[in-house]
Image 1 (spheres, rainbow, N blue to C red):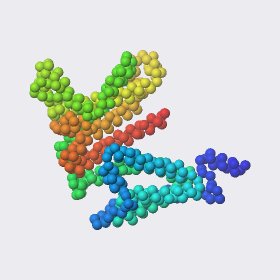
Image 2 (image 1 turned 60 degrees about the vertical axis):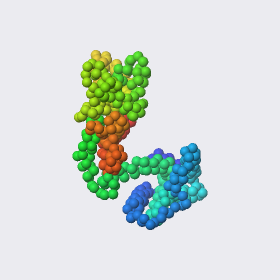
Image 3 (image 1 turned 135 degrees about the vertical axis):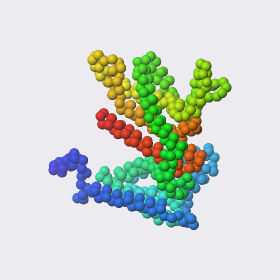
Length: 447
């Protein structure tokens, strides 16, 4: 009876029961300490591996094949043959992971050895398939052994039981590797590159950032990007909110919303071409819609995309707003429908006008959605490229950070300047993303 009471009390408190044989459950403090030390050791080995001087005479050590040799062999095949091979290889890798996820976490001596072998074999094979140089094999083996031993030891001491942490790691590994390879590593490499010259060999400190704020191309790309980030979300949100309010009780609401949302579904290049024809300027017969109207009323055609300052920037900005308004309208319209009808009826009984109800009841009720729309459109404006590239090519000081970043790399082969501009985009976007995430968390807490 006492054992049953003790077990029930342990389950109610969420503490793991003592193991059989009288052994105490593993200490979480010890586990965290060892894991932290192990991760620091792995990081140190990676740093030593990257900083070790390369030996040009050393040959890569291979297991007989590598990622590079596989893709070289695959590239020599026809496109029709490449597709099924990629599908088969991808299915084989996924199949192996699923088998390990299904069977390895089970209890038993055989599954214990399966976990132990796979913990060491998977990181070792993953590193060796990169064909490390002879001087780097020691680091590769050490990293694989530490990573495998760390995973197996922490999994064995997991409070949920052996196999839980192993299974969780296999589930998360593909996504984590994709994030590390496709996001974290390029970000770190770009930040480091921004402190080197255009060749990427000579350290120049902050010169690239000084260039960004003093050179006309860099300076106007920053100024124009800030103009886009300020005005584009305001215009798109205000117009989208107006559309959502007026269409809420209009006939044919679905058709009208579809027409307004359609530009958002069009590719940015297509939007740029459409508005480039609108602003088209020539001395003879006008094909641009805007100049055709001006000439029809006796005026002279205007080179809209070449008028600086600000005119050409706002001409490009209106094309962007035309596309983003549909997104703002759909999000805000859905939020307006979620505003409680009781609040609107109570405000109406108090004798308020429709405008007062909209300002004092509807807008506060959709505040979170307005913030989401503002931050989302601002992020899209900060990383803009297509519209500027197609409509002006950055001429007449209409360039923005996203376009100038690509322009510096592809046209001038200046990788240092391009990396510095990319870092500035990251600096501008990061606070908005953090703020957006915090707002979404607050909204979930309220719900």
